[in-house]
Image (cartoon, rainbow, N blue to C red):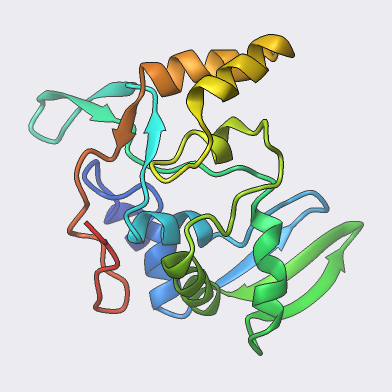
Length: 201
């Protein structure tokens, strides 16, 4: 019932996942439907609130604002490795009421979550250890090289990718790592969670 307000308040200057942040603040619930659906809807928000940055391509789209001016909107959000989301699931189970229920809709697996609780758990864990969500694949570009705190050695990663002729990693290495830029360029001071800013920078 609040969809119009949530999206009406979402402008070109809003953080990409801001509607999910607002939903978590006002007691929103997350309904995850589908056997292969991952995540709970708040992890990307937590990463943004903590100010963790990725090296991303220098891309954007042009748009016309309310004043008729043509502006450039730059990519300014974090992506995550899809194999890392499930690492949080045991942590959600430790806090009563975080996973409200699990069931099936037809043949689809579903979870109903408390978004405020999943967000609080993610902020607590990732605030202490930003590497927590990273997958175990040593050849995963996203986890090994794309974050400002990634620990892999770029030269060795490149050599391994050349040796195995990993086209995907070679493309990502030259497009994102060599030519990329840390996004967002500056912390978003408008991002607040329950009255507190979680930006470290």
